Structures are given as C-alpha cells and as structure tokens.
Length: 182
Image (cartoon, rainbow, N blue to C red; front, side, top):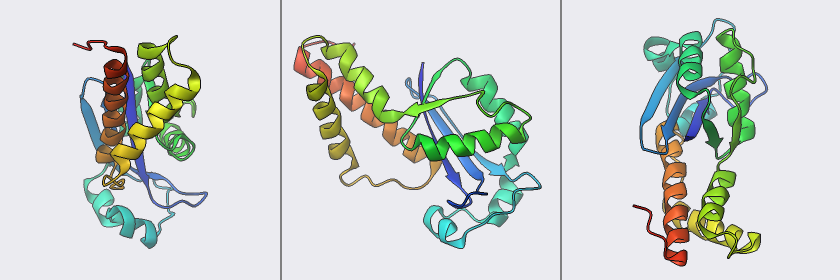
C-alpha cells in the first residue's frame, strides 16, 4: 500500500534531527508523533522553530522516545511503498531516527511523491498517454492543489496534502479515460 510521510526537524543543519513524523496510508489511516530527542541530539534552530512552531520544551515533555517511534515505524510501515515530497531531507531524518532505534539506516526507504503521482496516472492512462502527457497532468494537479495550500510545516497536514494530490491525480486520470474508480 502507498504511504505518504513527512518529518519536521530541529533545523536544516548537518546534525539536525527529526522532531515530528506523520504518515498517511492511501486509505486515509494516519499516525503522527512528536519525537523526544535522543540524548546526543543537540542541534536546535530557533528559525526552524519559528517555521514549524514546535518548541524544544514541547518535544522534551510530550514527545515519544525516538527509539520507540523508530520501532513503531518499522512495525507499521515495513513492506509498504513510502513516499515524501522532499525525500532527500525526509530520508536523512528517517535514517537518523532508525539509527536511534538501533535499526539499519536504510531499513525503510522513501521515494519521491511525484513518482507515486506519475505511477497513479500511468496506471489509469497508459498506453494511451505518453510520459509527457502524464507529467503535464501531474504538474497541473500539483499546481492546482498547492495554490492556496502552502505546506503547513507540520508533519500530518503536509503528508495529507500529498495524499490529496495522489487522489486528485487518480481522479483526473480516470476522468480523462472515462474510468470509474469506485
């Protein structure tokens, strides 16, 4: 099953760490966690805090221990197709989190959300549509949904925005081909 995920982090620095993670399955089931930092996670940016609005005090008091979040992610997400809108950043923070849980840093892999959108269009429109037409459909949907829906810089709403894009791509591809999705 397809799963869209997103992280918020302490900063964008080399030693940054994840402070929030959320994921949403293609069927709408979702989870979200604030992450209590591991003892050696010390990087903090007040500029990043101003963007996501999550304080160090909040994650210290209300966060779930990083190792427990990592182990829970493995249990729930292993075997699923994971996607994120910024997989290089989210993959970095996923690796940091997995290592904190004593797990291999590549135990879970993240693809680019746009690839999931293209695959959804391709599944419904190929071979009638070429790759350029599929890419145009995806870009049109992304532009439409992002217009007025800027990322909130909170993990669950941002992951849900990707899910919404995926559904809209599928709906538009179905409309163009006369396919009934129900």
